Image (cartoon, rainbow, N blue to C red):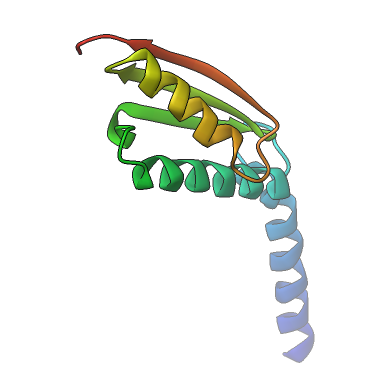
Length: 104
C-alpha cells in the first residue's frame, strides 16, 4: 500500500513538473512570466499613484521585461509621463509607448 502511494506521489509530481512550463502561457519560462507579472503590477501601481495619469485608460503588458503601454490618454504630457513612470520601475528594460492622445 505504501509503495502504491509513493508511485502515485511520484507520478503526480512528474505530471505537475511536466505541465508547469505550460502555466506560463505564451511560451515563456515560469520565472520570466512571474517576473513580468510583477513588473506589470508595479507599473500599474505606479501609474495609479500618479495624479496626472489616468491609470484606468492605460493598459500595460510585459514580456521579458519589455513593457508595452496602450490605450487613450488626454494629452501628450500624460502620454510622456506614463512612459517615464514605466521606465522608472525596476526590471523594465524597454518601454513601447503606443498610447494615443485623444478625447475617447
